[in-house]
Length: 323
Image (cartoon, rainbow, N blue to C red; front, top):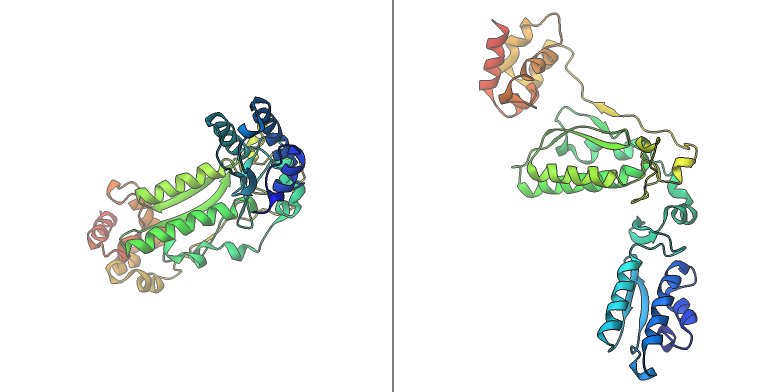
């Protein structure tokens, strides 16, 4: 470690600037009075902490030090903890943000000033197609499922889906998940999941909680506007900025067979007789309507029953239709 990397007790402000960087004025103003307090309370220069250096690490101040008193140690530890909730640029209250895989602690205003492109990030919707990225998380008949959310939530949504996919892969087929729809409603993340497990439910709840603190437009975490416009789910900066992108629309494409022959081909011979008896309504729509009030089949569709080989449930449906 070079001498210039250490805190100089005769030039605290200058050495802090050398250690933390001139752009981190918020942290310099945070650390300076703490170090001045340690200096005032030291009886002699020999009582000052030895070999102190400060660096940014994981979005907060990391302090390296030599021997020091217990009181000075507590002061330095408190300084490091406080920096995790202080904007490094201006000193306002802030939360850690993930920017290009790096942790940066900045307030909403400094976030937009430093990363102006984050507010307008909008990728082609095909990039966010869940059915294509994680086909084992949707129904076998689902061709396309694009979340109807702002660009600020795309990252947290797919972090959650990656974790769900990991659970399915580790289970070796024992965990079955079927995501039906993903959308934003009144500033909250709305996840519709037909089949799930306690572990998948826990991941979904964490996604919803994180979204409740994340701006739907720019992705800033930890500060959303309150008041009449709270339902829009925007940070304090985006709340006063005109909308500059077109929100993606939900694209949940789950085609139903259009003919009796296609229906039989997809669902198997067990319901060929049922398909032949339906005339006024689409066979799958009628069968799913019959399943809905049955507690034993709650949340399942006819496609699920055939895929799972549940001939007993199919027989109950056939008996119901022939009453």
